[in-house]
Length: 365
Image (cartoon, rainbow, N blue to C red; front, side, top):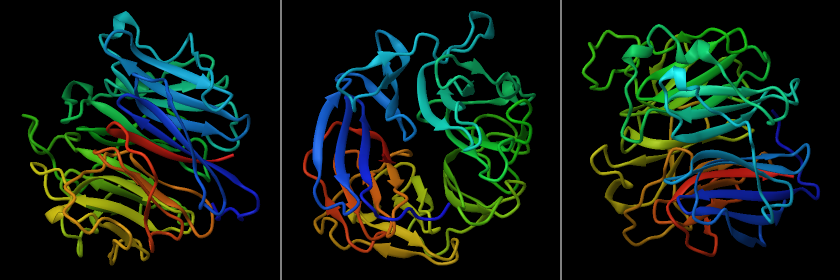
């Protein structure tokens, strides 16, 4: 997908936190920002998605009392409606829907199609523009299902990717399970974990699953090329997920959570110290960018705090917009939001401090 020209575009930065959502509004220059919120105050908001076709925002919300729900707004958060027939496991399934971790539109040729990734790990689809949802049980009933185990953040399906050239090809990633691909629109699935190291779950190392993928993205220019931040690695696949190879050389750590890619193909990650120390290495907040598909990496920190800053960035708390030059955004575990309007060369902090940030999405309206 090529970058979008900067011609009177309006941008909304959607920020989800453990206590509600907040929206920043700006134009294509990305210099002046207006903040609204809290929206859905008090609710955990783990997923957000803006629908440019009709001005709607969809949020995956959760509360200890009411459980996981799907909510929509058509007036930028002034009012919200709950989706009555949202994602839900049947009682017979034996699964529990704890959170909605990801909401993604279907292929451009399928305007009424939506996908939702949930915890316990599963995938739901809507074919009527989000009014009703159905479980894609070819995934939850996969032969490896008895071997699925949760990661530290739960057994969550957190990444959904649709092949831009083939609406029938989908990839999903779940912790601590791994990558699956469907070539028939979600009816059947195959594991895509070759060369990925297993993580300790009590299963034999040779099992097809037990791979703790933290985040995965598609290369916008090369069909079938994917990247992922792993629990102890950064990897690339050049064969649609059939096999993976490390691209972690040149990074200060191979542990981290978020990953995003711009329309020009720039790849961004935030390395963390280690599994046990989930903050940026040595307290130095730096973003790493690769412009050659992971062969080399450059640390970017101009405008970021110079003082020790022992923060982390969660798996869905980093995003890029489709403008040119690309805007890149991330939110920290301490509730700060930083952005770059020039693909990472210079960084700025947006005003305000929020609860722990779970998700960020850049929505061009």
